[in-house]
Amino acid sequence: MIFSPPAPGRPGRIVVRQPDDWHVHLRDGVGMRNAAAATARAFARALVMPNLRPPVTTTAAAQAYRGRILAALPASTSFVPLMTLYLTDDTSPAEISAARASGIVLAVKYYPAGATTNSASGVTRIGHVYSALAAMEAHGMVLSVHGEVTDADVDIFDRERVFVDTVLARLVRDFPALKVVLEHISTEEAAAFVLAAGPHVAATITPQHLLYARNALLAGGIRPHLYCLPILKRERHRQALLRAATSGDPKFFLGTDSAPHARQMKESDCGCAGCFSGHAAVELYVEAFEAAGALDRFEAFGNAFGADFYGVPRNVGTITLASQEWMVPASYPFGDESVIPLRAGEAMRWKLIDGQEPGK
Ligand code: NCD
Ligand code: ZN
Image (cartoon, rainbow, N blue to C red; front, side, top):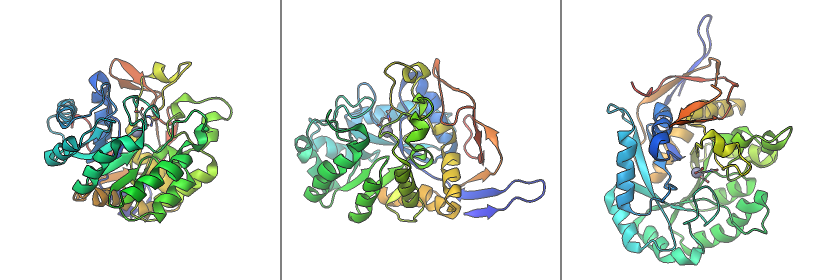
């Protein structure tokens, strides 16, 4: 990273090697163009989640989805979508082998059935997917985990912790060589589990979990656009996640979980889970790292650790950000509708000034 402090008439700048987003929802259909353009603006590659309707359960479906994403971007784009398969009770070891052989599928996503948006086809009992997990372990394929139990009697703020203590602990014990990413961690306990586990267990951390605690969601009025799963937790968890992200430990890396929903799907009497951060993801992370006094740790978090874990080369290009205030628009287009972004109508401290502008 190169940091140039502000000088008279010129804002401060940082130049960092281009990051990847190791967890994003680009959706399908008309909104996909907007979601993909936002991500391709700053990131070289992104691991695209498979929770479409119907879910991406086969390599053939992942190939087709990858083609639709690329077709929605300008032909000149250098952005690379990396694909995932959606694990179901019926995923066969043969499908895992086919996914591995395709070269385009990097991970298999485990949603406990009913845990989050479009997870109805997910895994009903971990025992049902043991043959698929054994195949993944044998092929060195990554399991991306949505780590929340779904039991109605477990409090929503405890669902990640209980998942870690029960399901994840068992999974890591039964498949000691399986590469596992605990996605979008939201608790001190999850960070501690990942840190204590072997080198094949890692975690992604989102900008919203680094910047906001649950008071931002619930105190002084309910903010549906800050509602995501896992739900934001107490301030002490946010502090623990900031420590993990800025620790320089390669187990923790960038994954935005940018998950756009049309405005009316969020502002409803039963609103969807998911925050849209793609419009300013890098800027939001840089702000969080700067506030923690760890700007110099951002580059490896975004560029190195995820690539190393997934076994792909690190990006060598760079992006440039200026310490230049700008206002996030109140909304962005999302297909025929609109999406309310993180920080809507509020100021940002950093601005990407040299990335892959959509349409460039
Ligand atoms: C995601 C979505 O909308 O697809 N929502 C969310 O709250 N994070 C699904 C997910 O990653 O859980
Ligand atoms: Zn997600």
